[in-house]
Image 1: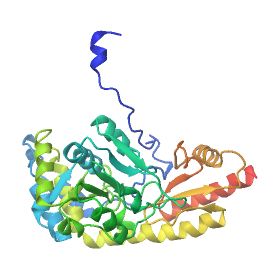
Image 2 (image 1 turned 45 degrees about the vertical axis):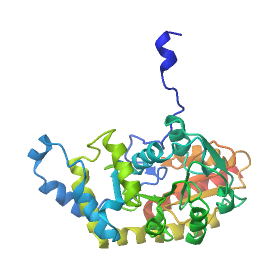
Image 3 (image 1 turned 135 degrees about the horizontal axis):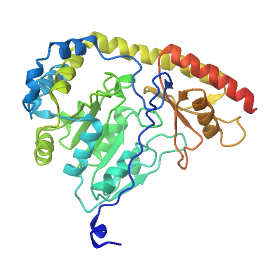
Image 4 (image 1 turned 135 degrees about the vertical axis):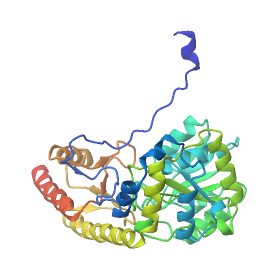
Length: 357
């Protein structure tokens, strides 16, 4: 080994869902929204003066924070924005998780958490879900250097009621508790009100799912003014210009178009509820999803059913997500697509199950 190699940071990277180059596939593997963003975002881009691209964007993302503040009725000094919720959460790891004590998160959860912990050299412990994939608040009743969990959880799609979320917060007043709400708009109630009740709470949301802007990369967080100031101090010590000019104007347009947002969320929820019935008819079982995906298993396919089904639907040009991980390697995460896309999935699954029996 050459001497300089000893000093290179070595991490096991996060592996995102596959992004096939063929645009004609049925893509149900990365929880993207199957519908386009609001037309008002396109109008904003068309009206943008391209000469402004020679200038740096507003480092404080003022117009976007103003729009988010109005939409959620929360003070501007309680809002942080970043390049997608992944960037926001990574910044939270850097800012808040600096104790010698381990942070806690569920053992079946967003797999990026352990990667960020490794990258930022944060000690961590995972806490077990119950046999039905529910988060158990009592498992967080121990000394820690911080807590993070998604609600609804990913990849299980299960929503935890706010009384249980608050129970976790109340038992952990000496550390920062981060609630990752990437999927909250598809079911349940946000924990945003807790940021005014508790000064140690951060709530993170994203434009990638319910606002159809995964390609633009906008995430945001709510917290006490003290926590948000700390986040901004770290951000400005890292990269002052995280939000580009197009992201700012598209983000404002999407945040202001409430009617389009509500209509899009309703379509996803309606298709999801239909999917639950259709998948049950095909012999699948799954936790009750409150997200824009379903975490399903099928017992009747003889060997390694999830991997078999995953491979066979892919051969038919349909992409879903498979996790080769203990406890969940018999499950598929199926993103909710358009009604037409889902019908193609049901037809393919019916064929595959018939073949394998």
